[in-house]
Amino acid sequence: MSASFDLGPALLFCPADRPERFGKAAERADAVILDLEDAVAPADKIAARGALIDSHLDPDRVIVRVNPLESVEIGSDLATLSQTDYRRVMVAKAESAKAISRIDPRFEVVALCETARGVASAEKIAAQPNVIALLWGAEDLVASIGGTSSRTPKGKYRDIARHARSRVLLAAGAAGISAIDAVHVEIADEKGLAREARDAAASGFAATACIHPAQVAIIREAYRPDAATFAWARGVLAAADGERGVFRHGGRMIDEPVLRHARAVLARHG
Image (cartoon, rainbow, N blue to C red; front, side, top):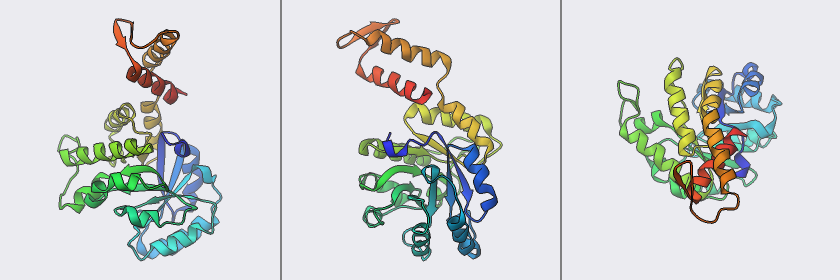
């Protein structure tokens, strides 16, 4: 995980034109994503930028989602951010590594790979020095290739979405930065969210984005190792003290990859 992106597992989106929600969102989540893009109607974007300037949240726990770099809105978005203390931006529909590299170096970038071109460019985007994390998005991705739904009738991601999720995670891992899992848009589907968040944590995602405060506790619990897993990790690392190379513990072969798994468990627990 990138040291500059150690925010915690639950990142809550909040429309930037709803300043009355800013404080509560920041209180409930590990970090808040103030959204200037899809959550704000075109007619309300000027008001949203004004609310952003007037806000007083802890900048270390705020990400601002700006409009796509090719949009007519992006100049105003970045100019607004320059009038605030917020320096972490999420670029919507990120597709061009070159365009991202030209963003003012004062800003750290979370690149949202949510189109076919964005996912196909994930490796190049992740390699940019100002990019600290990648987030993927299912709904815009499927729409970008002419599809109608990212999930099957049983609620599971379709193969194209699972491919994009894996590619973005691998691109982030190869670049040594963090990956953030996509939002679970069915707010009432708590079991589905818990299942996907547990899988995200086990797979190596640093966090999961969400759209409702009720989802925060579910995500935090999913990322927190259970007592048995925590005890296993502590036991393995304790047993490794003084060992050289591969050794046996609890009937299992333990080598360096397993020790890294155990260290990751302790890091998430802490």
